[in-house]
Image (cartoon, rainbow, N blue to C red; front, side, top):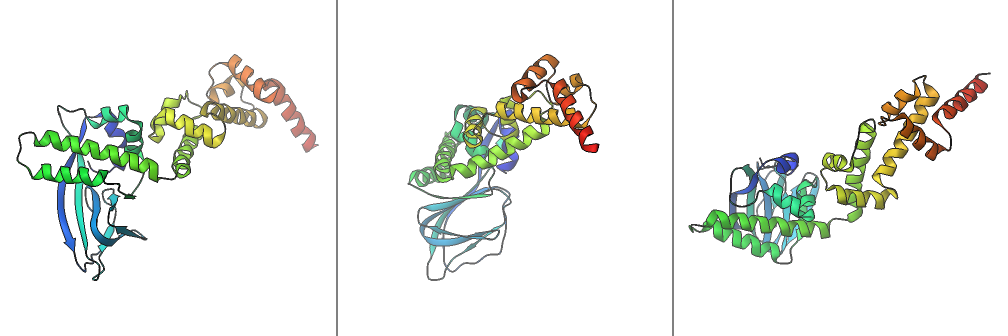
Length: 294
């Protein structure tokens, strides 16, 4: 399993560990390749010089100390100016399910909100500027992969964990916060609109949009100026108003239609939001309809 996108649910349920599948240093001179893709996730780190990585319709200039993180199976190609050689470090990795002495990624995710958001964020590629942490981690990783020491597997897992932590921190600082929030808030709203008739809890929304419920709650409130519970309640009341005015469905059934199993609770909440009871609202709405028809 290699895709960041495909591991979202599995990482929280099974014992997955990162596995490096390829790594190499390379000095490129006057190089051009066709679009291609890899089965694994790839990091292309510029050690010296510069290059252009084309991803879909984007041409991304990478200079010394910057790198691109590409999800698996994302079409891309490398372009090197003949007058500007480029030395790079490339690493490709995926995820495998196995038993290990170290904690699996799902346990690390539960302990780190940054890591949780990084591994669940929907992206095809990220271009980031290093402050040396990534380079030193990658260098230690490849040196360990080349070693024949008894503890090699243990050290590789530790370096990969360190790499993910640094990447998570860098992504959090690099991504525009409003852009990141927009992605998750929109998904949360879509989920609420599709499931308002169900017994929804904040943790259910968090699982649906692949984000820690506490963090989702904060960005939702900040962007929408109301909590998810308040938004859901308002949505349910609007759906109830439509059913009361446009149908003959019994009020007790309408309560169930909008996700409230108690007619008494539904009536209290409806009056709080509309300053009238469901029955009064139905009579008023139907009277207005008759007057319009007359």
